[in-house]
Image (cartoon, rainbow, N blue to C red; front, side, top):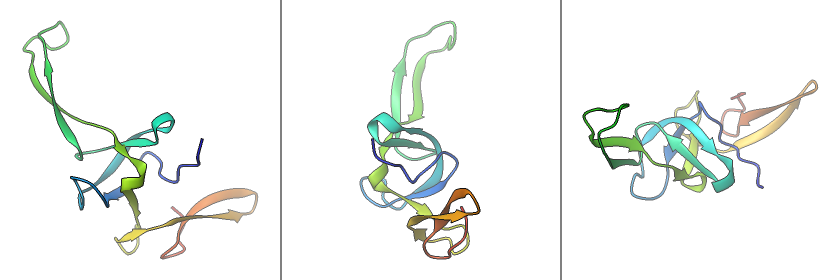
Length: 104
């Protein structure tokens, strides 16, 4: 399994696909499939039957997973996309932004 450089809580931008250019926060990362669920991006409609949980039923909008390769991290300092690097500080390994050398 490959090392994923995007974690939940990161602010990312979609760089490829139908939702190119949209930004959002990563809600969840699915490591087995190399996908992430981004808030407000890749919304799909799901038809639901009435149940005890949702007595009305109907059409529900929810986020679908998007492949990690289509996402790029946004640098908190310059607000542009950046690559992720790693640096050892003391005895801890931390993620850094390649553009600003700032700890993420």
